[in-house]
Image (cartoon, rainbow, N blue to C red; front, side):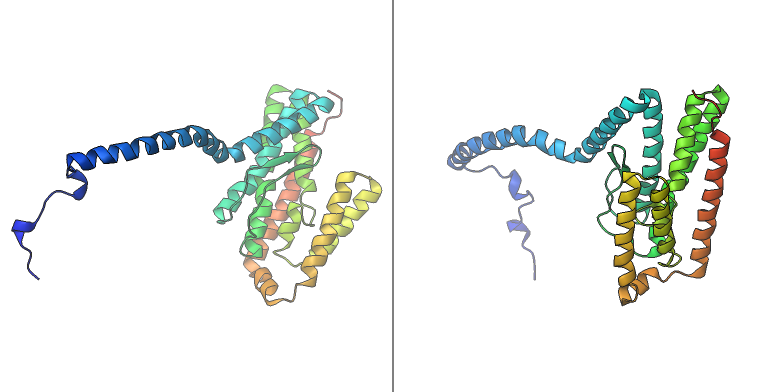
Length: 274
């Protein structure tokens, strides 16, 4: 097929001027539409911006509410240090979830119950879930270690107390029961480890009754019942099929964390009140 150059218009249609009558008609039509579009943008623009920042708003609000709650008991300095180290712990989960390609919310804080990160889907297998579970205590242990180093450098009993609390909470989170981090790490070994975790939490509750421990025991028992009952399903077997090298890696990191956290608690323990 030949192309007749005499009938070829080198200008795109958008650059062609319409006839005067057509241009005047278009202006009358588009003028009110433009005004309506401007009005909609003035109303919806701030709303869209707020929706875009809703995660940051929720994070900030829950952080400040929890900070105020802890301040009412321990004072603002201890409360602020505790909240910052709790945030460091939760950011470990967020970072690893994003590395695994799992959409996750910003950390949300609940006074006297801790914090959580919402997952829109489960990790692809138990190996990924274990890494997500251990990422929080790993980063949390590093944060507590930095706090302890600052306490030693400044001879601050306040920072020692904050570090001790952070070491303890990270160690507590390693109990092998879901929803604690240790329960997600135990998934890489065998679901039977959750029985140990539920039993340990139950003993802890009878030794030191506490509503938080009771909540963890109930949630742990539910997760154990649900996951154990489906352990023989093909999808579950594929999910928990973890090569021994990966199990060894999780085991080494898990035991190393326990050792470091116990040492950290010993090093930061206060033998006098501050």
